[in-house]
Image 1 (cartoon, one colour):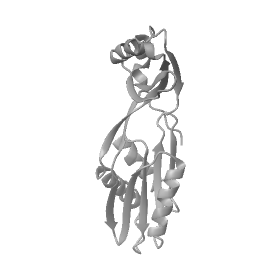
Image 2: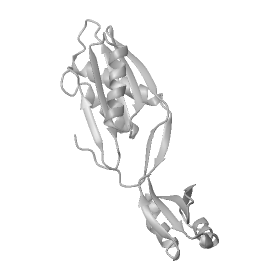
Image 3: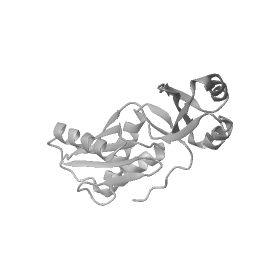
Image 4: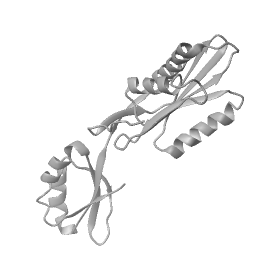
Length: 207
């Protein structure tokens, strides 16, 4: 599945887990929403559920993470095509969340629900699980290391305090240094604000 990357530097994720239970004709659909930022994190989440609910018939899911380089997947896990993973993913899209995975564990109750019934069950359980999460705003930053002679400390601090850069930490050694960051959407302005740091050396880093 292809997912468009976000254009800005802001998105929403979750800071707490969410769960929900949906029942229909004896079948139980237990939905779990978690914050995940990598495939390894998702696999660990899924394996934990499979171990805990080892007698369940289906583990259907959808996830999307890395909003600048989207990783997206849906899985019906044996249910009719697009009756499980797709409605779960649509719940994620409607909630406008990233770095998120929803797994719905199904226990079959003996009566078939049909595709419309399955779509409703998987969608509603996923929606409720997401509603039970605490949302959080996430901002994307660019990080730099700034190094300069100690004699330039006053000048550097004066310029930094008037800029859009935020000081994250000190890296003092033979010369002075700071790790600084700025939101991606404001980076060009921030770099222009510190262009007069003639005694400073600026290098972009990965935090």
